[in-house]
Length: 86
Image 1 (tube, one colour):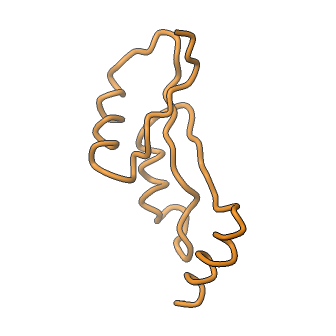
Image 2: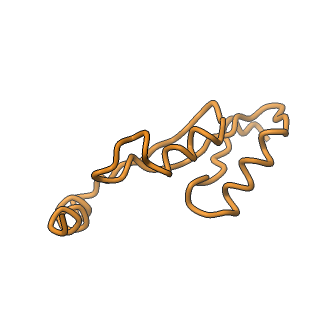
């Protein structure tokens, strides 16, 4: 089909996605590369202690796509609420 990258999911989000990446470690893709998807580290957690980042690394994909909050609503509302709890 000519698909170069397959975003396989978020290995740290649920057991089904984690199982998918474990299964794919033994599969050979002929034309595509598998990518794991996840977020930046959580607030107030060191990167080495962040479970989601550890799952991205343990997926053993050559490509990882990481997103960060960039929508103004996230910055003004969601992140602000988290900081107010600290």
